Length: 469
Image 1: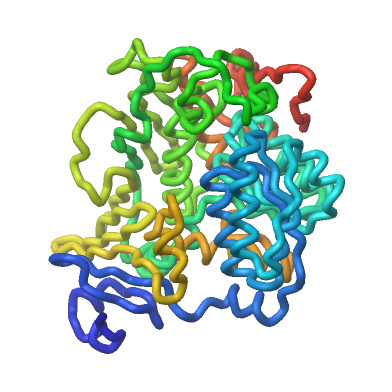
Image 2: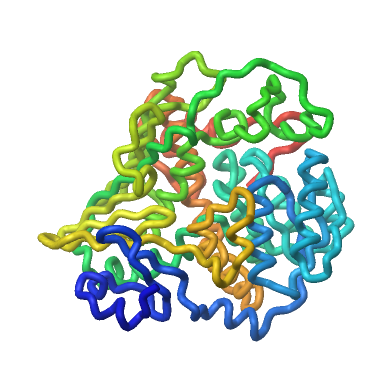
């Protein structure tokens, strides 16, 4: 592995302006791989002033556990996982065993099917929400009302009014809410924003393209109606969403069903749109338009589009989203990402890459590295996205530091609200045949379009009640 001195002695690498106090190595022709820097102000603040936190998790499947594992890695002995919640008893029991192996007190947390019982019984300081999208709003709002700061997975809600209600609740109760849009904490991207965007090295920027060509993420599902397994309370899993037929793929492939999520724009798209907004210092778009449909796989059980184009218009700037599942990926490093064009340079990035090309120059290509030396359990953790675990830890340290100083985290609920609601509005435009939606964030409505405004809140299935604003 190269030392930092050797790294900076090479001209192309020096031009990248990469992270100080980071370990760097070559990773193929013309690509450098950078690990997270050893210095981290948020981590230092937490280690100096951190306190004991009682923690609970709602949604104990793959990514809920992944978030909780990162929190335990960062918070150390201060973190006591007191409660876990899931509507699948097998997932819940497995999660309890794994958390007991990792947390300092080696205790199995109390296990719950109903998040309301966990919040009532455990008196938590922090609650993580790792459920499917249609189950984000009610537990998040209930956790904030129970006194918790919240780590909330993206997209923050399944409809616009849910998102607004969560944002307003967080502000009313002064809760710290970190959204799992961790590109804002990804070290190579934090560095790139400073070196290329904030410095003016990109020049003037008028357009950006975000995209996902990851076929398996949106691959069509052809499945037959089945009986739910005995370990799953399917009625509770559906919750406020419609109780449709149970499919074998539904429980873990729910993103393929618009009834419980917002398609790939609500999954991968919200990440790249949020990253682009952050890099370009953009807030709410003025106008949103989208077209697409189920063109390639019309007979699939899947109910999300397999093809979608969306446009987010700002004053003098445009951000686009392109998604499809049915072609070969043109570039393996950028099957998913954002490409931003400036008058002086080009930039492309995703969760693990950050490439910069000055006008007339060569590409400087950078990948995020793994951190197995520092966190050996990363090597064996099932399902871990190993090259972004460092970014997730940085995001957790940022969350913990804000719990200490009560400031706004890197991916504050307001940023999650803007990015999520904008992507949901794109889906509403698509649903309405591609109509342009002029958004009014102050009044939380689409201007001069009562039909679009009827779609801002999805109907809830009784007895669940939709949040109000």
